Image: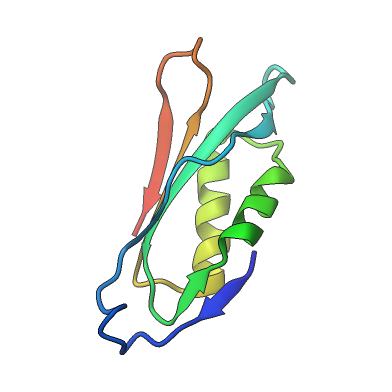
Length: 109
């Protein structure tokens, strides 16, 4: 993932909250069944002095995972936090399957 520097003192960006909503699902290989799971993520953050570059975020998710869904939430959270060091950050990861019951994991600070 990449970051973009910006001026946090600008009146346009003061107390800004950025939400990256649902994007195309990415694939996780379930550690229990070995089957493909379609996962989606939502990110919400208040930047300090850097923004998350959305294209590189999507490319990172397209690589996919072979983790438990709970771990994916923490991995995405840790990668974003270490990259842009936001004031606040929330990552919600959920199964994107119409046949499964709603289920999600959220990590926030």
